Amino acid sequence: MIRRTFLAATAAAALAMPAFAESHMGPKTIPETAAAAGEFSTLLAAVEAAGLAETLSGDGPFTVFAPTDAAFEKLPEGTVEELLKPENKEKLAQILTYHVLPAAVMSADIDGEMMPETVEGGTVTVMPTEDDGVMVNDATVVKADIEASNGVIHAIDTVLMPEG
Image (tube, one colour):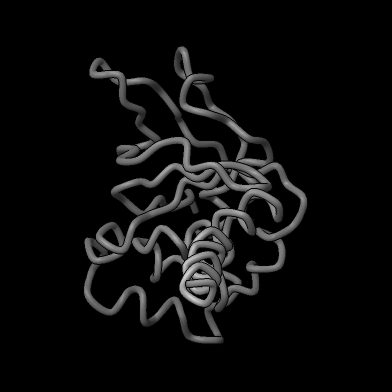
């Protein structure tokens, strides 16, 4: 009887550990949060190839308009493979930093058209839609306000391309 109770208590404690660890270690960084979401594997590969993983794991706060894997699939065939080549690291970093704002902006903060400057140096047009959604340039936010320890992720359906 004591052994069965001990095993039940041990099993219950083991099941509770992930929740305990999450609550005591705090939320994950932007790359960790994106990895856990499961729909940003192409973006994460690009972040690694561009050498931006450490930056996006830093203090922030950041807002990342994160193209989903489906968004990358909409690019012309071969585009992603070409951008991931080491010789295109600078161009890839330019594209990725165009998706990042140097502040945390939640969807509730967007009450009219905004033109914030991105980390890349260009500006994006962020505006609410009639159906309580949000657009960033020509991309639609498909999932908003994914909170991370150092900012927020908004999943978008289109890869944004900086001017020039």
